[in-house]
Length: 181
Image (cartoon, rainbow, N blue to C red; front, side):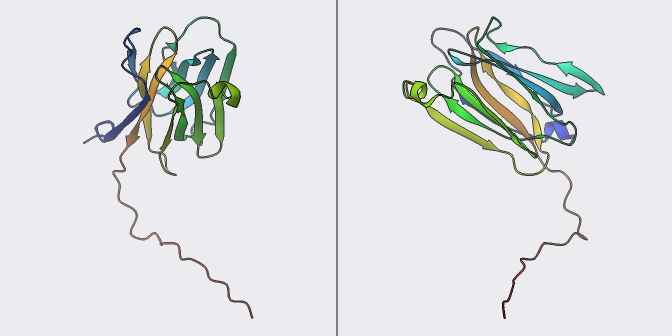
């Protein structure tokens, strides 16, 4: 079984069944080597998201998922690929769109992006937090979600299942105890 078939699909968090603006799906399963993330924000929260990843030794750019017009926020997250990789995603969504998003890597956090003003957040209808923690090792396997012509509706990810058992020669760390005299 190859590593791409040994993935767990997690999520998405957010709204993916609009009654008025049919969401479009995106699926980047297997595109785990993210080098940049482009986040646009607007009045609806996360207006759009786009990813640059490495495929077959070259940089590739995903589609733009969400609103393609002018926005009042734009953020470029540059990961130190391949040493830096995604270990978590969290944020806030409402009945319509992803309002805020934060990306965590093995090195640092990026964000939050979107509507971060607490006074504006008080006006959200039915806000819900989401937190996806992928652990410490590089198990991220790609993003998936939905979007409309207005904004990002939902986001989830793939988790690559570990396929190699730990080395039996590796030592289990022991908790140190300090005795004071």
